Every structure is written in C-alpha cells, then in structure tokens.
Image 1 (cartoon, protein in one colour):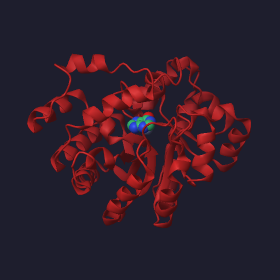
Image 2 (cartoon, protein in one colour; image 1 turned 90 degrees about the horizontal axis):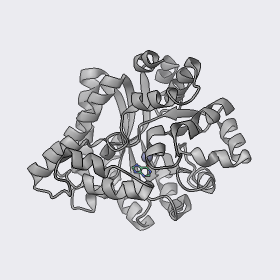
Image 3 (tube, helix red, strand yellow; image 1 turned 90 degrees about the vertical axis):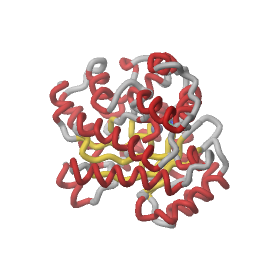
Image 4 (cartoon, helix red, strand yellow; image 1 turned 180 degrees about the vertical axis):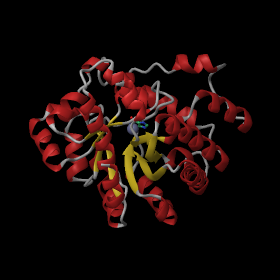
Amino acid sequence: MIELIKKLPKAELHLHIEGSLEPELMFRLAQKNDIQIPYKDIDDVRRAYNFTNLQTFLDIYYAGANVLITQQDFYDLTWAYILKCVEDNVIHTEIFFDPQTHTERGVEFATVINGIKSALADAKAEYGISSCIIMCFLRHLSQDAAFETLEAAMAFKDDIVGVGLDSSELGNPPSKFTEVFRQAKAAGFKVVAHAGEEADFSYIYEALDVLRSDRIDHGVQAIHSAALMQRLKAEQMPLTVCPNSNIELKVFESYQDHNIKTLLDYGLNVSVNSDDPAYFKGYINQNFINLVENLPLTEDNIVTLVKNSFRASFIDDDLKRAYL
Ligand code: HPA
Ligand code: ZN
C-alpha cells in the first residue's frame, strides 16, 4: 500500500506555501534578514509546534512568515516545496499564498508573487511539474482589506488562477466577503474557500451559495448535515481534505476518528492534501500513509483519492482527461 502511495503521480490542491517553511530555512532567513524569532534552535521550534486548535497554529505560522522579505526568499521557500513534490511524486500543484501576511509588513505584492512564480517556472522546466497560484484573503481582516488585495492582484491577473479564503474561521463566515468574491468571480478568478474545518456546516453552505465556490477547502464538518452531504455528492463538489492538519489542530482526536473514508464511501469528491506540511509533520505521502495505517482504506480508495485530486484541479480539461 505504501509503495502504491509513493508511486502514484499525484496532484496537490490545498497547500499554503507559507506553511511549507521548514525550521531550517526559517533560521537561515531570520539570520540573513536580521529578524528576531522566539526560538533558540530547531528543537525549540519543533517543541513549539504543539497546537490545540486553528488559532494556536495561526499565531505561530504568521510569526514564522516574518522571516520572508526578499523575492529570493519567496523563491527559496517555493523551491524547497518543489523538491518535496519531486520526492513525493506530485506532478501538479495548486499553491495558496497569503498576500496580506506580507503586504501588512511592508513587503510588496510583486516581491511575493514574482518569487513564487519564478520557482514554479523552474519547477516546470526542470521537473515538468505543472502548477497554478491561488491568492487567499485573510478572513480575520476586513472585506475592505480584501478589496485592496484584489486590486493589487489585478496587475498579476495572468499569474493567479483563483482566490481563496483562509485564516481564523470561527466568527468570520464566508458571507463577510460576499462583495469581494462577487467582484473576483466577475473578473474571471476561480473561487475556493476554507469552510467547515472548525466551524459548522453552515459555513459550507455560505461558501457554496454566497461565494459560489468551485471547491471547498477542508469541508469535513459536512458530515453533520444529511442534506448537505446529498448536495455535495450530487454536485460532485470537491473537498480538499488535509488529514495531518485535522489531527494536529484537533479537529479529530485521532486518525482512527477521521471521517475521510466515510466521505469517500458516500461518494464525495474528496482528495488528500498537506495544508501546512512544515507545521503538521509531513508532506502529501505522509498524509496518505497516516491514513492507511489507521483506517481500512483499500487500494481502490487510494486510487480514487488520487484521481479526485486531478478531477478537482484547475488544469485544462484535455490535460485532465490524460490523468484520469
Ligand atoms: N485553515 C485556515 N487558515 C489557514 C490554514 C488552515 O488550515 N492553513 C494556513 N492558513
Ligand atoms: Zn488550509
């Protein structure tokens, strides 16, 4: 089973590039850019990665991102993730980035996207890995701030396939961002949104009905509504599920309690993704391995999960058919 996982070419649809910042690179960049970080060594960092919910993670994740300053830093961050893709046989990846995490610190939007973009161009040239970029609005900030970000993104319209919504979910429902998503959709961006990770399934309904989302990120709380489950199945609405993340952030107590197999057996379009692999103990293959070691997943289940990731991707339909 583990051999099958390793050998299957995979797509990843839910990966925050800032969440792939490994402690070693964090230390190197902190030193280079003369940024203070609250850790004395790598072991100290790993000890701090002990979360009780989404917010306790986000506090540490935003602090880590402070070390990213120059275009080369964003290149190095992205390139390090690409090398993990090579290792795990990820042949297509759709990468989230959080512009506001950086623009709020005085780092230009262009610095961030140009660094990510040039690493992705090199990934295509060197390894044939295809990719696209999705920009997320931080939902703990205002809709006005999201509008400013959308405006900044218009200069890079051709480099950004879609917009998403992440950060502190509870108390920040999708409907807080109705207008900015309407404008983004009208401008031709695909739409995704984190919904039903920690907050209840009403957030998934809002992501679908108010934001007109093309995919739901996480979405595991859908299990609590039979009507929503039926709808997600009928529409084959993709849910980009992140097992390690859900365990590390205590959405489920253990892998045995994770509902991914139930969602899959019900007929939903679920895929496996790593979310913030540097913080959640592993990249995509490790997510699959943790699942098969703890749930009665069959080889067919694994193949379906992998096919779902291509089915739910934003690659051209012709190319998609080649993967299915
Ligand atoms: N949820 C919300 N926001 C995030 C996450 C997540 O899992 N990872 C990075 N930002
Ligand atoms: Zn996420």
